[in-house]
Length: 366
Image (cartoon, rainbow, N blue to C red):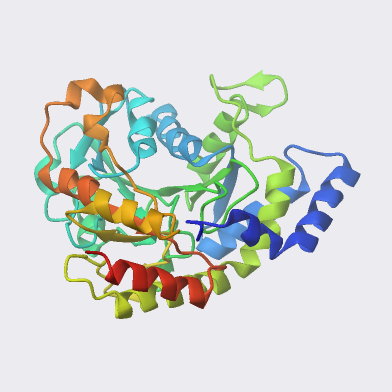
């Protein structure tokens, strides 16, 4: 079986360095808010080109704490609206609704799967306070038009960068394109920990200070609580592992792009729709997502050939029970995407032979 993502093999690439890092933490005996987290925050801020980075427990917390911080700062209040792409993973939307804010769904572009910047302005109302762009599948969602709309209407631009570590737009790295960004270090991400982890990046010191305090129970000074906060801290062990893997991220991305390029060049099946890539700098190949009107048949066919694939994602947010008030809404582009997408294996450790096997199998589908 060709695994969709061989996390064990990815980890084994750096096994000795990871073991040394973990032992260093164990020997130090300091497991939270220590030197490993401080160093990772410094390194990751430098990597993204931002002034500040705060490690948190996971990517969802990163997004929801950003929004909560804006509320504590008086920038937003309950009932305000945040524009989000309709085809995102549900975490983007949970972060909004969890804060008593209102998610306003906007359809994506059918070719790029990113939020359609031509449809955003009509969704802006006097209650709109921000736009959350999601760099879905590892492709940059930012456009100059989105930046202009934020300036024109005085909106905060928040990036969901869970899937796009190292992605660039005109030389600038995702995570530094907006006012703040949430990052995920879930094990399956391009930069993954050995469990859950996340971070917030920003150039806004005031926001950074509130985020850091909120993530630590609302406490900036021990036993003094300025806010009703969270327990959302990146631990030392995960920070140490991420510190090992970060220097290899660009090299891993290069390999991912080689695989994606081979797929694009050699998948020739007439019924398969391939992703549209205008600029390789804007795509770090977190997922390689194809589309087919016969998606379920194709997935079964590939499984029988010993190729594991995944669907990102089978049910759009507005059709989920969790948001039952939206169930009667119609977002036809989003629905079409969710009915047709299939993710092929892609990673820095997949072999050329495996990639060729996958391509041959896809092309032989009848």
